[in-house]
Length: 87
Ligand code: SF4
Ligand code: SF4
Image (cartoon, rainbow, N blue to C red):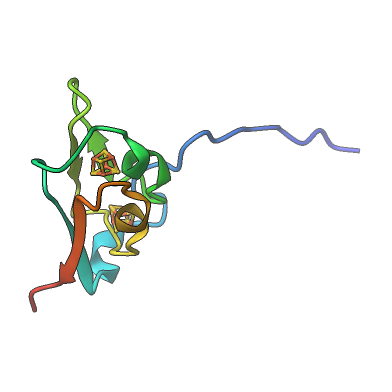
């Protein structure tokens, strides 16, 4: 029987499905004045499209954010609002 390599992925790789920003109809906007730096959005983003700064501030990489809204749902202080994508 051939040996099957075992791999573990702790977090999705950014852009593992390509430039997923092209899928978006809504974009998340982070209100940094409300953000408590809990990093839940960073943990839950399925595209790894939220970047974490050295001070734990968070930013969205719109090249890869697909607009799923998971970050907005997970944010405990409602610091992330989903707004329609400008056409
Ligand atoms: S909407 Fe939020 S969770 Fe979804 S891909 Fe964009 S940054 Fe990630
Ligand atoms: S989930 Fe909300 S409060 Fe937590 S880091 Fe993200 S934007 Fe900030």
